[in-house]
Image 1: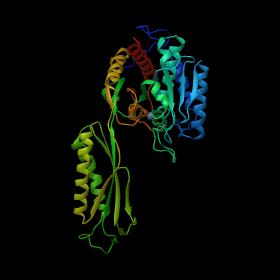
Image 2: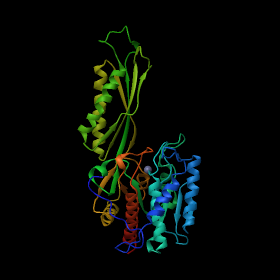
Image 3: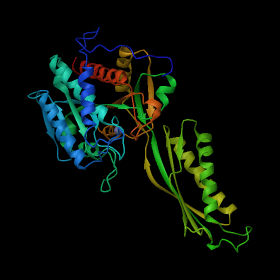
Image 4: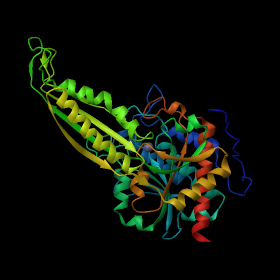
Length: 399
Ligand SMILES: [Zn+2]
């Protein structure tokens, strides 16, 4: 971390402002135990949605909720919920995340937000704090979309948005590891997440003329491979020149027929843009079309550009974001606001209820990897910040 230290988080008895303190030991133990489901020798986790490890971890979570004296429920979509028993019909402030993973994942993505929400509810329940009666926690089914039969991720949260139960949800809070380096590089300990970048994906197909790779002179070739390679090499500058906060990825490239001695007659490239402004995505798309057609023409080829998917920019609820930002400052002075460059269940939830997120830093910005890490004191601090936010939302809604 750059210059800031984790403030000591009290984990015994109430904090200075009378808000109960989470148990660091219980939080970290539960995180470690959850990581044994699908645990790998390298410290990572394989818990793709629907796998045996995923199903077993969900049964474990429901049992853990019950052991805390709380009521566990699994809905038709596979989402696991927990709340205090006998607390009426809501409305509920929902807090949670997901416990499924990508293959060869880290132990924190999703799991941290679920276990922290459980710890917050346990703490409020034991302290008999009034906010315990209106808090529900959730582990959503299949956030990652990593299974071959997945509809593409955010499956459980999207299902909840179409379920009657969403009408009893007043707001949604999700605590998560950042999965990127921005907090670490700016010295932030906690961040209120104000939205999620929009994502647009394109496939560029270039058509040239397949021919003998040896006998065809260099001038006059219609080399589709060289044309898409030119596009690929220019996409980063295109994105940076459009919006300094935009990111672009050229993740797949394919030359056909694909032989060392054949000039590629056809070539394909995928391009993904992420930005926090719709205007940037629009401009980048226009520039990409021009770049593809220009690069193809330079190589005596023609290009087709197709936008294959589009997720709009998500802006979380401004009032809830303000409330979260205020409560973070009560936990640590090094707090700020961020946009998320990764997708989350919060994106689906925000289409139906006021939503906000909290981030803690990811060491080295590493995620979707067994090397994913956040120091334990920061994990505890983040859970305590979630508890503060839950109490603040409760106070705002009921007083
Ligand atoms: Zn996640």
